Image (tube, rainbow, N blue to C red):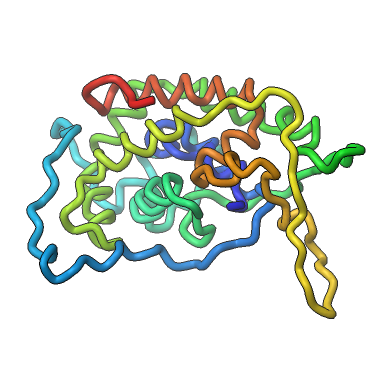
Length: 270
């Protein structure tokens, strides 16, 4: 699993702190850190190399006062407050970090190196039951303050900041290996994936991945994955929402759906 519950909550954070909280959760998820680099898009066969540019599904409106790269820090501080930005965010090259993480939350792994958030203390906890380990009962409560932070963000203002930052995000998305892809379409696609995350009531069963070798693992909590194959096959962002607990997940989904309404046309795909 992706090491994720705090980092996925920051999915829309510079833009809609619902995401801010999702990514932040990622720093506590119990999964081995995947490769640092952002995966390049698959190579197309020679016959497909000149494929037409995909039609834009969710065009964004041109915002008044688009941000220059040097204005991003101040804009984030105006939305979230300087203390929150200093505590939670990696503002260095923020548009690139944001674009890469949004894309990866819709994939199997969300590499840690490009998260737009600072690592935090604490540890994912596991409860041992007679029929196997489950996610600790206290985990969800640890995330509640972050969910409250996300819910306190003015979604309309967050969406406006997103629109002002959009030229930087689009350029970053293209530089990451998607020159013919429209970033807002990918953002909406990933939000829809997160909104479709199944709700799991009751203890979530885990299994500990065996690591063979003479040197014992000093961080066993990063080797857990979901025992249910259906949950283990979810995307990195969906796994994060499951780890946040059903109540927090519903509240975050509501915030993400609200943000989606500001930047997309049409109803979310379920």
